[in-house]
Length: 334
Image (cartoon, rainbow, N blue to C red; front, side, top):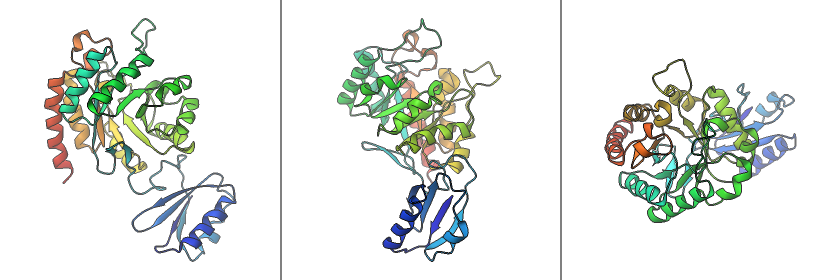
């Protein structure tokens, strides 16, 4: 349920209403816009007397929300959320470019890629320290050593770091990581999502291989309901019957999510296609479609990459793509 207050409401009366609603055992999500304040009521609202609340002189309207997701619902928060990572802003018209290798391999590799993508305009550095792999015999990542190498790259370049967390037991290793990524395989790891809700760091939440948009938003709800509103959604392709690409990039998800939620939405064309030559056109299409950012895999030697070399761009290819993306952004921003 949402309660829309009239403009210019006295702070004392607003506080009294909020305390009264909390007394009913409800959580209150407050969204202060330029022209109105929206109170999102979270919990069992079946016993709330809508007519009584609507009769109050400070209330403009009361509406029930049918969707199961509340905290991340745009009806609760009409204005776009802006997630801030240091000086980098994602959402609300701010476009973010995240780039780097699928996995951290060596200090030389991650430093070289970090410096290259920064020179091309990237805002953040991605790199996998913990790698979920289909085969137990594939490279699983450098783990805590990989995180330390990412920190070195951050110190050298100033780029905030984004890396994937796979287990609650590893949370202590991520205290100094700027953005924690929840991969597609963990999108519905609800124990992990709850813990991340209390961790206080921005979370990049990737859509699962076969999950609906509602399920993605419900996963975001787990994080936000636990206290962390800094969530970035990521469309990274879903598994369909097509066998020419790794996944099928659902670009329609971007404008659809824009209607449903206030959270920033970025796109991962690398995992969506699995083929390096398809990454640039899909990145440009995502930019034109209104995405708030892109996360793209870049490797200085894709042929010898320990993970996902086939979908990784070379630094010079990323540099050319970044220039094209900026041209698209100039058109979209008008």
